[in-house]
Image (cartoon, rainbow, N blue to C red; front, side, top):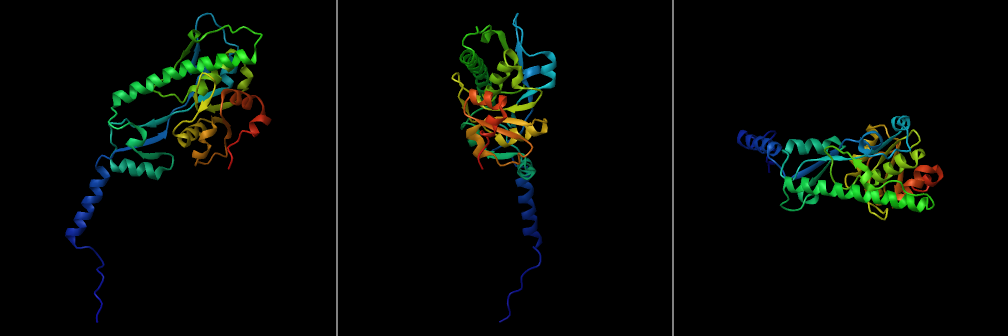
Length: 266
């Protein structure tokens, strides 16, 4: 029996149909969220402002020589559906993550609602960060009066929302108002939510935020300990300090020996 020959090429109609399907898939809008590295904000020089007659303990020179970066990510809004070609490009880039919309946003959530929620989350985070910093300083220096209140602080973060800058806000306040040596001429990147008690919570997009930290020239990244398991990118150029609360973050930055005990476990 003579075997049926295997065709070496597609006939024109199936070939045209295949090309059409490929082209259609590349340009049809898809319900995915693309998360990529976002901008960093130096909280010492830009993000945290001291208002009124209150004077920071950190000098202008110390603010220029040291950096405390708050990290962020870019993510398309819930109503935008990127075309397949952008989704494919994001998958291939290596510094982005592509997730179904329903993983990032609530079902039926609008762009307006998402923006409002992000702004509200950030505002609440700012309040919690100020209270957490004040509580920490009261405990650390019980015999010294706290000469400031949350109303003396103004946070300035452009085009950024959500709660993940909370830990960075608290550390920036402590450094600027009481402990300049916390920064000590270093470039430090920080991410993590904060509670009034000082408890640090996990955040999304940890890989993309660490990529932003490396691009900004940071040598240290303070992150929630609960995010250690989510890291998949190369971080050899960064010293990771993984923490569960504000006190651990403070002492990890003050003491190199303490910092060594706060590495992410392999």
